[in-house]
Length: 206
Image 1 (cartoon, helix red, strand yellow):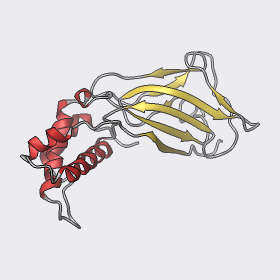
Image 2 (cartoon, one colour; image 1 turned 45 degrees about the vertical axis):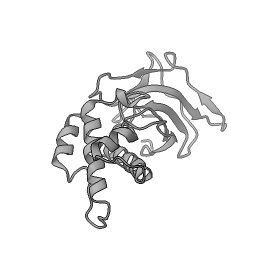
Image 3 (spheres, one colour; image 1 turned 90 degrees about the vertical axis):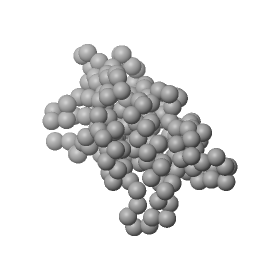
């Protein structure tokens, strides 16, 4: 019986832009001056991060490393590697450290295939074995397998579903109006309108 599968995530490249621009946020906040620009920029990032955590999705394209202690064992776990933060944009590479300590890159469509659900409500993407293949046995270490992938709806805020963008604006408004809150502050779960907008996109934890 193999040891339990250990996994962790590392952000490699953060989103290059935000789903909501400063101008859009300022229009929503009815803020005409420039004195609050830096503060508003921070609220945009905070709202995006809060919503990503709540719905379990990446909004703007971002690169992650999923590191595993081994490949799935094909028994109770199945053969597929499940990738978090849908929608999956692409898989950059699948690598592992072999018994000699050498990092080896697997070949897409030869060693493995990528299953990428589509649509705004897409579920998690999968990396599955190619026909007739078996996962190799890596060296015993916590980060023996590394999957690099890009998650997100696209490179532009216009690619993000309108409901999610509207939820961001509402949350930014909450943050802006309640900036002094310390113990009980605004959050995704505290705003019913935000929750309702995000409900169709939320991915259950696993």
